[in-house]
Length: 188
Image (tube, rainbow, N blue to C red; front, side):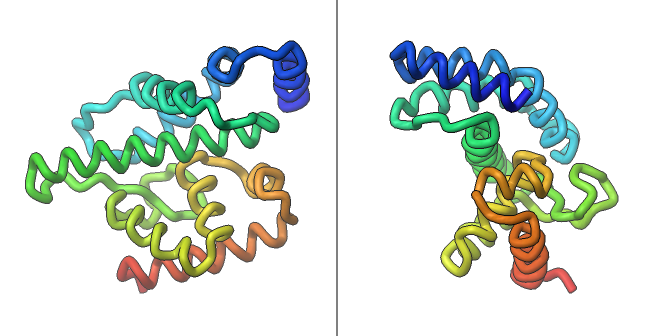
């Protein structure tokens, strides 16, 4: 799948297709994967959430197509950027909801190793986002590891590929980030 995606991407770029057209075609190739990711993210949200997985993917699509400066490298790069877009959408949605409810119905997200399981340690998505932005000033790469793992559901090997580092480096960054964020967010 990854090789097919990269081959298709290279062919489109060689043909001189414009960035929005390339992004639209790439999204079509990865739509099922992005939808599964959105479903996983939405399962961890509060019950009665007004944003549906399909809407999350479509909003991410609009952000991706609107950004014509991105030169896609491969599947992992595309998914990483899509994950960032979904994170921004969820954070914006949580901010709007919190403003409307004056703090009620906080959205939760997990930092547990078992991505997406309800039994994991959960944090309010706005608090996690704020802590993650603060952590990025301490260790930008480790913050990116958290973003790719939590918001994109990527495995260690995929993250290593996206960041062009070893799996061992990603494991270390993930462990350190979980500890730092847990402390920052009041976990023991």
